[in-house]
Length: 451
Ligand SMILES: Nc1ncnc2c1ncn2[C@@H]1O[C@H](COP(=O)(O)OP(=O)(O)OP(=O)(O)O)[C@@H](O)[C@H]1O
Ligand SMILES: [Mg+2]
Image (tube, rainbow, N blue to C red; front, side, top):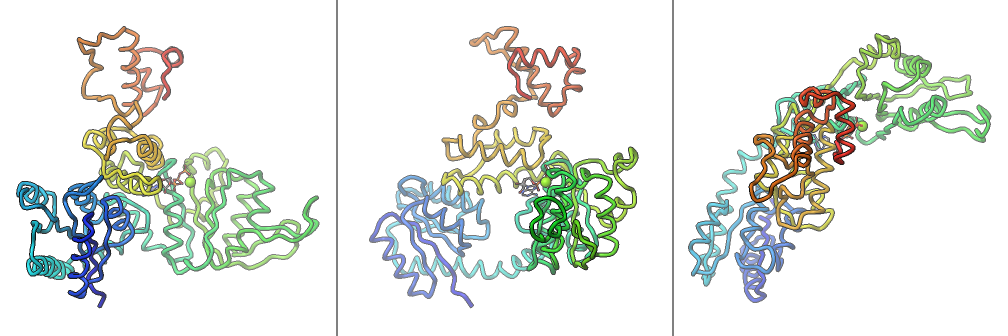
């Protein structure tokens, strides 16, 4: 069994070395750092059993470390070291989720005992935790965040279909995670060791797309100086992800149908067919049934692709996941940009939860990335969110006495608020405002409103 892993955060050198020595003698595996910033960096990469942190540190202090660990690493216990004069802080630390505290000056027996006690308590809890994490693992996929009912359904479907060769059609609005889920299917399947090759069908012309998918032989067209493999061949044994499938031409739809039916491809310009073993996952944010009605999409291909379909919920259907998603992106971008931002303020979170998210998770990700860069406080505040999210829809656009506004300013604020409420839908907004769409558009231009 691995020894418990402990991280000691202490700026006083003598103290740090002493603690390291005692803990190492106890048989624990010990890391030490001098600052709160370094502690968070370490804790980001390692799941420690216990973090022992001094309260007083230069920069990020022990309370901040505690808060951040509670959020980033709920599985890690924290013990706080406080000076004896500050009983209040010890109490505050316990309230903040510390497992215990040690007050300075302490004797060695005391600290040994406290650490043993905390680790034993964890061992007891671990059985439980193991069970829970197994369950979680069963229905959660790397990087796919969200515990809402709608997402649990998605995980269950992925789980059921991942190892089959059946084609999966992923539907959902833009930015709902279609590509992410396609990858999750592949990388959790028995094909995971083989390639996952995405192709954006909307980005290529018909003939380029055909060559890209099925390859070509030398002389097939001007410039085809030697044979080239298509992705269906390169991905043999793996998965091809056909993104924006609603955008392929009718002729290619027919070619694709044949490939799906008999598992054979025919490179452009070749007379020979080749067998390939490829699993196809396709995605689109277009309405394929509508496209079928207008004869832009072949019904036979639709039914072929639609053997299993997975509809990803838009973010507004799973607002309860916003907090978890926002934290996930905050961790990602604060680490990437070396910023010590520990959380999201209540007001900012409320604003995020109130917004309609027409661009879904991608939009949320962009908002958090931007906020992480702009933020100067140690948490994301309302001020670093885009203006359209900051106004409170619960109140009319107030005109504070000390800061009287012109009619135009108030009008501008009101238009922004209505646009927010309608998720940027100008038709609905103009209805509410009682003006026609052209007038709304003109006003937006004049008042410099970007929707
Ligand atoms: N459930 C989720 N958990 C974590 N990140 C997510 C989730 N859903 C989406 N994302 C992130 O949001 C961004 C957009 O996701 P993705 O590219 O998969 O969307 P999409 O549905 O393919 O969008 P489009 O239709 O515009 O191509 C990506 O950076 C992705 O990692
Ligand atoms: Mg996509």
